[in-house]
Amino acid sequence: MFQAKSASLALRAASRASASHVLRSAAYSTATEVKKITVIGSGLMGAGVVQVAAQSGFEVNMVDLKQDFLAKGEKIITSSLKRVAKKKHADDAAAQQRFIDDVMSRVHLSTDSARAASESQLVIEAIVENLKTKQSLFKALDGAAPQETIFVSNTSSLPIGDIASATARKDRFAGLHFFNPVPQMKLVEIIRTAETSDQVFDTLFAVTKKMGKVPVACKDTPGFIVNRLLVPYMMESLRLVERGDASMQDVDTAMKLGAGYPMGPFELMDYVGLDTIKFITDGWYTAGKGLVGDKLIAPSSLLEKHVKAGEFGRKSGKGFYSYEGVGADKGKK
Ligand code: CAA
Ligand code: NAD
Image (tube, rainbow, N blue to C red; front, side, top):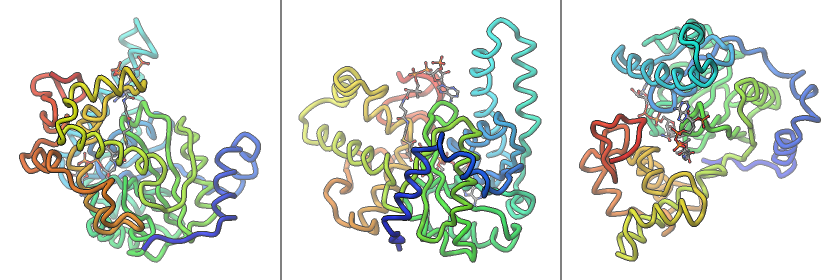
């Protein structure tokens, strides 16, 4: 269940985030020192979080179910680091390689989540968007990690309080919502439940600032800030095309050139993952507090068709557009 929280607590959290320059020293004085972070899940988001954490000087354990998945995650990181290195050291190939090697020296691969969590002050979960799977992971980690270790989820849509309920550390549990592509997007949403302690909030605030991100605070409410606005917009764009009012290509062009968005909604859905969009909207439609049955997020036959066909967007080579042969991180065909 979503946790209700007093208005004063929300305001305090929000003002701490927005007045960071004034409150920094007071806020940081209560923060726990984080040296080692464990990131669980080495997919699109997990790999990005590992990269920015290691680039910011943290030691990082990257965990996934199989070595193959870890190798994929490592590849995502090195190809992104190459872009960063080229910008940092334009004409110096040796310096580019030194930069990449230095960052990668802080990344440790593992398939043993309990062991990785046992040596970390912060565990960031970025696995599949499924409540039961996330709960069973955190339940297992709760017994393995030290008392003071903070647990956070990068969930796009699930209630943080529901995930935390599987553990006995609800005061040391929060949401830490990064955006895709993590190395490029500056925002992180910090989600507090009514039970998240001030010390934990301060620690997460300090960690995200150290990562070069801009943190904002939000209550544990469906979609937090960004997805509450972005996901209904995506669903409306699907309905526009389903009704035959405009073509997918024209909707994308219109939103880029008429509204100044960097990607049109169909390009963005392919970028995020169509399976992830479906997990989010199905979850809200059937269980999201205040959103159950809401027509804004009602199932879309066009989305269903692509997901059923295994067309998840860039990560699978095909979604609304085709990416075969051009690489998941490059342009569409
Ligand atoms: N790693 C490192 N750098 C990257 C990168 C990556 N994976 N992806 C892009 N970049 C950098 C590039 O190096 C480039 O940097 P410079 O401008 O300094 O040269 C810059 O980003 C722009 O990249 P490109 O020129 O390749 O491409 P672009 O101009 O089309 O931008 C984009 C790509 C940044 C992804 C841009 O299209 C964009 O901002 N799209 C919208 C992304 C968005 O809305 N994300 C949020 C999704 S919702 C979400 O994440 C929440 C959820 O829960 C679902
Ligand atoms: P993904 O499918 O790319 O990666 C998930 C990874 O988790 C896979 O490598 C999988 O093998 C691994 N995994 C699954 N169960 C595991 C377990 N028990 N232990 C260890 N590893 C496990 O997914 P993603 O797009 O990176 O999304 C991850 C999370 O981040 C989801 O909760 C999603 O909602 C959220 N998120 C996604 C986006 C996005 O744009 N894709 C943006 C923000 C937040």
